[in-house]
Image (cartoon, rainbow, N blue to C red; front, side):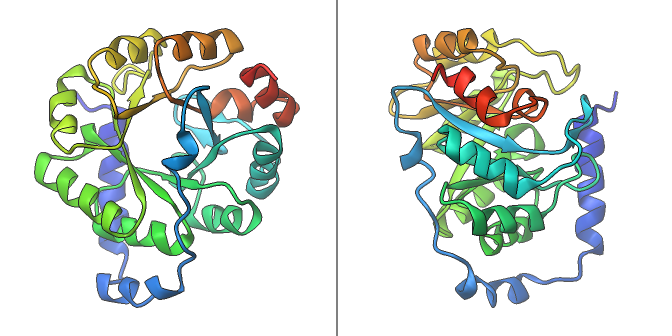
Length: 257
């Protein structure tokens, strides 16, 4: 049975087939890319750190914010105490773009994560050229050789790979990469149901000094304290903040400030 993740990845392959830009052309642009910022260093814990997400829409939630100003949102995050910013760059399903990431890079000093469905080296080069300091790699999207190759490329370009998984059976193959940062998605990618306890359970299976990011379903300072007590280093929050009347107030309330 096809899932929304299958649909998104299939469309991403179609997009890449239509993209006529070669790896050689992208390599020629790397020298003009802004220097990487320390994404991993920004997630030193305790206390738990916030990766605040810029996204306009999602398949499960629809459009979350109108009007949508990525730069204004990112500046609000920076003022309110976020450690990093995640920018959703998928166009069809999340209404984002690399232009959003590049604009945010010019506007704030925080390290940036390119969040997308990365299945090709060209997307990694695009991320660095646009100013990303980290790239999301979803284990469920990538077979072992490709996951390792993209992980290595992200690292060689001076960025931080955030390797995400949901299914517990993915953990062993992720840990074989010796990743500095692992993301645990609390959202079941097949049913889209969310369980914040999922990250808590998975954290027990991840050895130190790997840092762990909890993703999805985080809506209150109570949730934040629960994650911090479970020794989770960081959290990625998007939908809750995108729906807030005042983004700065929502961030401060989430962090307990």
